[in-house]
Image 1 (tube, rainbow, N blue to C red):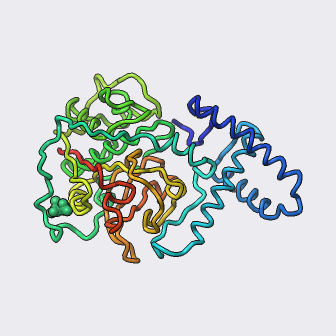
Image 2 (cartoon, rainbow, N blue to C red; image 1 turned 30 degrees about the vertical axis):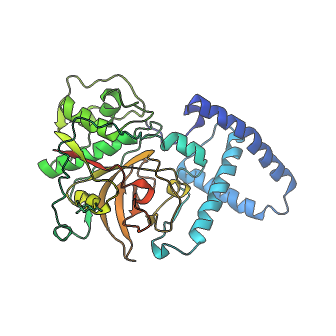
Image 3 (cartoon, rainbow, N blue to C red; image 1 turned 90 degrees about the horizontal axis):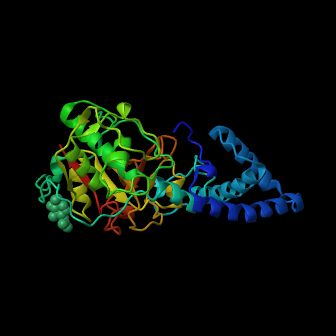
Length: 365
Ligand SMILES: *[C@@H]1O[C@H](CO)[C@@H](O)[C@H](O)[C@H]1NC(C)=O
């Protein structure tokens, strides 16, 4: 999709209806404020200026003034949340995430969930392509792996992608992990076709609604591999499979799961290659995050594994906080140029922050 702007007319029907109902209440509220509180509107004026500036920066337009007024109310609420989060001190210290009015600043939490955080479906059925039930990196000693690694610096990570309105994080996550092992084993960095996964992978995946990372690996292994993204580009919606006659460039033989609830095992895997993870992506702080380490300040989230990302590194920041470096599929204009750091080895989080240590997996070349 060419445009990165979110426009409600492109959302699903039930969602549009929900928006319509909110429009009525929010726009009424806005009109009352505009008409009756002129003398105390100082803050609102500053907020309105901030909103106009943000709209200009984002190139955001709305279909009419009612919609704009409604979006202003959402922006205002998000801006208050962002400002109070950034002003707070406490857990996390200097590693605390810094939130910012990014491109999602005019979306409510519900809208954000419906568009961006529904793409991963938990799969407890064993698949037949688990390469070996013995964890491949289980015999590696922690002292044999580097204290930090960034697969981007080693050329194993392609450019950040944007899933737009197709909730196929599962496909971006598995493709990024395959791009990683492909570059590590062949030396070639190639963006692989996520559209092929969306259109062609087996029926257990619900294409743009939700999917399973392991089923994607299974498809890649069984079908002969993924073609290059440039040969089968991303469209942001599902279509018929058009892979025939195209040349696969990256193959895998299968995949493995990282032992669950074990961030040491996860680190041993990431030390060898990028790893797919499922996690709870529904967090107001994550929606608006810029830099810093998510989870270091105890930002609330659950272990509902509704989103997928790819871990492409780990390390310790200059304040001593351990992190995972994650590649997301919300565009390079979200987070830290499309990436986000999640707190690692948090003592109170046996499942990993937001459940990220529950269902990690990686392709086997
Ligand atoms: C975590 O994984 C490592 C590496 O495989 C293993 O040595 C360790 O025993 C595991 N810890 C637990 C609690 O299972």
